[in-house]
Length: 282
Ligand code: DHB
Ligand code: FE
Image (cartoon, rainbow, N blue to C red; front, side):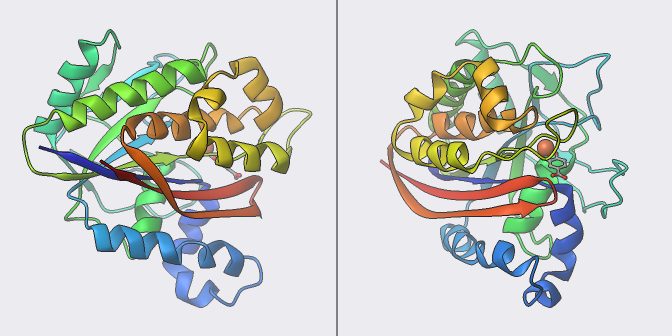
């Protein structure tokens, strides 16, 4: 049977996409050193685990979906996912391999639990997806890892509640673990932490809330899932609602969760960056 080995979360700020190809040079840069230093242990853990598949829970920021048609929950069911120019001036990444058979298994299982997913047999993936992949697989060495993109609306209100996202994650976890093939699966959740890119509160960061969320994601996810979307916007900023992607990841970890690593750094671009590595023991 497929086994969920753990979950990783990281911020996906576009500036990171520009820094990643120059990482070795930037290791001594005063701005980037504290950021990149935080990723060594996560990479070591991931490469020792050597997963076959990454389920990537992310948000599209206008590349594949726009305001005219914006599904609450969407999932890829393609053989390949491409990135394209989003207008941030960041390098376009090589394509990602899909696993349509596992995608359809998840779609069938999650639909039977009353979640409506928009199923995408063609899907462009944006920086919400590519930045974590490029960060965790240095040099874009992800060609052997099959990917399943799960895209959640964080852009146009009404957004799905944190509680619903947590339950979707649980349904995804049950789906993956009922897949009758011996696969090692890692769940990635991307985005966050607190940030607001526009309006009167542009530049808003809430360190106290971020650190509380990181703690609760590990030990008390139900408590965090109980927060309303209104409070999440207030506490994390308009774009900090990306926390729902972390919560979805956490929902999928159905076993005994152990924290392997945690890193927090303020700021990259306009955003507090965070990293969590969680092992999912049976
Ligand atoms: C920034 C952060 C994001 O999460 C994003 O999607 C775009 C930009 C930023 O801080 O620049
Ligand atoms: Fe974002």
